[in-house]
Length: 227
Image (cartoon, rainbow, N blue to C red; front, side, top):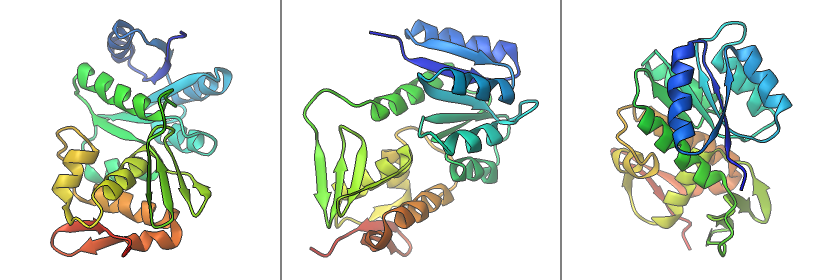
């Protein structure tokens, strides 16, 4: 079986080597890029790149611009790396379509764990499909795709996981803290606005079914179809 290929783009060679070494130990193939322009060239030339790890502050083309351009044509998982810890920067990353956002300094083991989680969810597995259905929404956990009234809907990884979590907990009021712990599945210290941003985008993408995701004031959200 071919190794999964990851693109690591960072203008610091030591950082690239650190990240590369940890992924190689886990039997991944790693392609390196020293700036955003090189990252885009590599992504377009090599059609089998399964995940992008992008530093935000890179010369020529920064990580935000790379993320924005890649998202115009691909749903490949994207992890952003940055020295900035501001919540607005993180929300900007999610708005552009990033799936994860990690602030430097970070644990390479945690980076690998998050990358593996994203890749597990993006791969089409050979086992029998596990499908959730509710109120005209069909969520295929195995194939990682969603249909609304029979029509395919494009969701990011976190939007997919959020919808999956809501559907699995239909009728239950879920606090933002509980959603963070369950959907982001790691110790997360960001602002609750991260959830609100994802919920807003998810509601928009599933159209009138977005009304199923109800705001519970002072608590969080509840998914209910009224069936």
